[in-house]
Length: 309
Image 1 (cartoon, rainbow, N blue to C red):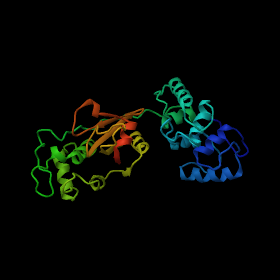
Image 2: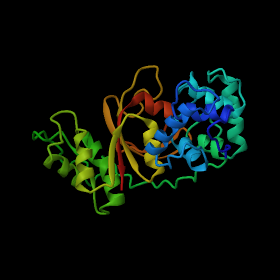
Image 3: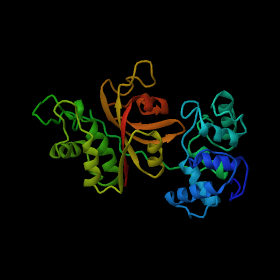
Image 4: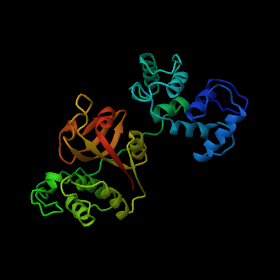
């Protein structure tokens, strides 16, 4: 655990705390201005607003720190905070030497040495302990092409060519989550019927995103959010939730280009290990599509729909 800090202290840990609570301009002095800023930050993040950075506030700071790497927030104050903690040259640029220092630290503390400073690495840097590993549970992995329902019509306009196999990735993905948590007899046809009843089947492009919010309300999910942030997905998964991802084709030359779809496609993200994410793909059983890197997902995702039981 980093040392407890109070008004009047002056050291690099004060600067780290100021950077990670977004105090401007950050520096090494624990001033009265920073006390005022800190008490407001503590109130917003569930800490006692006492203006002292002890174990509980340090832990909250670690939990809310942004992901930093050679690709995320590579330049600036957050890169400098990492450098101050791993002993790299604090020039504010997450380059090769900083990445190597992070990997050494991760390897020494039983973390995946990927050079990415996410929540587990921040927590270990700040508190000395990695957060408990989440026990990810894969939900049922239904497939659109399952012979039991592949030919079931899924159309809002009577088009017989529109079936669960051809365009039912949304209901099939949602069936994974519903069957895991709320109704163990749920299947893609049941969710497809709900999508039709709710007017969430579009005329020509599959299932609208409104379907997921309606499912959350229908099944009384504890919480539901939409996001474009992979860090929000990780937080959801760490808390026992699941994420439906809407994939697009991506951009030629970028990671993941056309890996999951040439147009639009829904899948379920159910866990992760470092920068690798585990995926239920309703349109494929290929091992390559059951996993995706952080870069592949960020380059092809259109949005995330996050569910908590």
